[in-house]
Amino acid sequence: MALNDSLGEFLAAAVDAAKKAGEIIRNGFYKTKYVEHKGQVDLVTETDKACEDLIFNHLKQHFPTHKFIGEETTAANGATELTDEPTWIVDPLDGTTNFVHGFPFVCVSIGLTIGKIPTVGVVYNPIMDELFTGIRGQGAFLNGKPVKVSEKTELVNSLLATEVGTKRDKATLDATTNRINSLLFKVRSIRMSGSCALNLCGVACGRLDLFYELGFGGPWDVAAGIVIAQEAGGVVYDPSGKDFDITAQRVAASNPLLKDAFVKALQESE
Image (cartoon, rainbow, N blue to C red; front, side, top):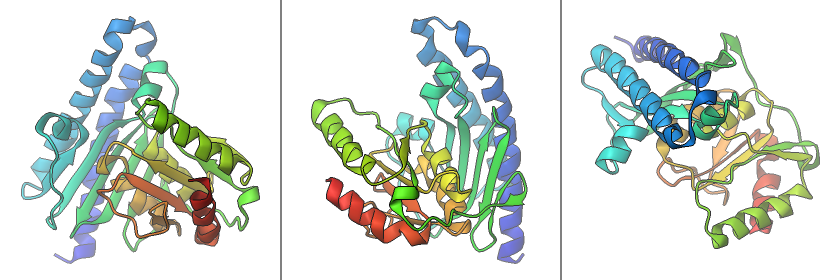
């Protein structure tokens, strides 16, 4: 079977899995408002776990020889090493805080790496019913229509997304807010919508011009979004300007026209 045929098959299976998991998320999402404080974490964990099991079972049936890395399984079993084998890297529920609060930026993220290179990506927001898909070399799509990054050429006209991250120690927070403070002078405005995967898709479809995050959870946050952003004509790189490393928990993305100015602004913000 030609690789392109099988990539199409990989994508179709991932879309099916994402839509099934999306249904579980949608059902839980509208219940969250009634959850007592004590139970919120449990609800998230239950939904997370149920979605991850469903996705992995679905993909394992289709592709029994493939490897799997998931946020939940990795959290349970310690770090899983990324090899050259075809590997599905899954975040069953990105935007868990949003999920708890009923804020509609939540998604399922399913990425496939082959030879460690992100090759197939599916990001599905079941609340807004937006399905982002991409196959390396074959373009990126939102609900089946092609998407492209923005054509902004200047930081001052650009919308920047970032996230605070999970750490709340004073040193990290000071570094984070100082960086944001510095960047606010240089861009139009800043958004923190709580989902790394959806930020990458936002860059892909031109809703966002710039995105960076330092210290996100792991490769499951970015594996799918990277394919989609790159296939939409975007560039993904380390915030220092170096090549992106999927294991490094540091990411920046933009259209190619803004990259140099963005890297410079990020360096100046340190």
